[in-house]
Picture 1 (cartoon, rainbow, N blue to C red):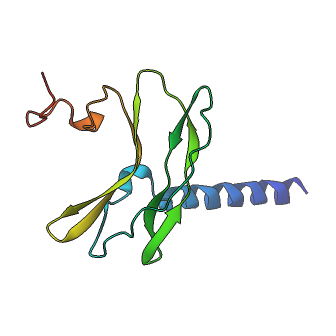
Picture 2 (cartoon, rainbow, N blue to C red):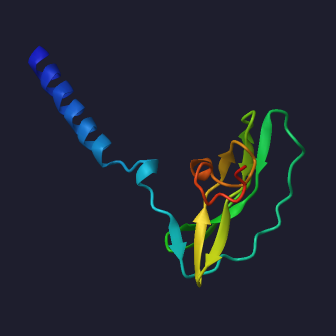
Picture 3 (spheres, helix red, strand yellow):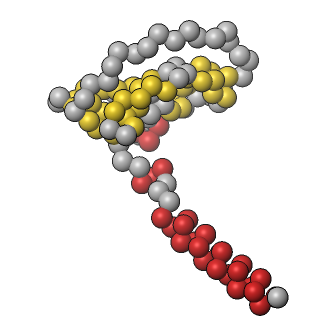
Length: 123
């Protein structure tokens, strides 16, 4: 009985380790760049303010080869950060999606680019 339990636990551990290696992480995620313009934003009634939360407005995401609407949600506030809503930007006839994010200094430039020499908001 102990042999079966040991064999089962070793097999389960090896399956879990193989599964963990194949799951994509955020660092591996590729930016979404498409040829199709997103539809106009939908009207969304913003609920009354909630203490300690920031409203993340609804937006379109590219899912399954089409634009899919994602409704707005309350996101827990992060003191010292400003929330930047998700957005689509046109660049040379293509559309690029930028996910919602927290910006530490409120300049609109993602924090990973703040120290770069071409940051127009750098002092």
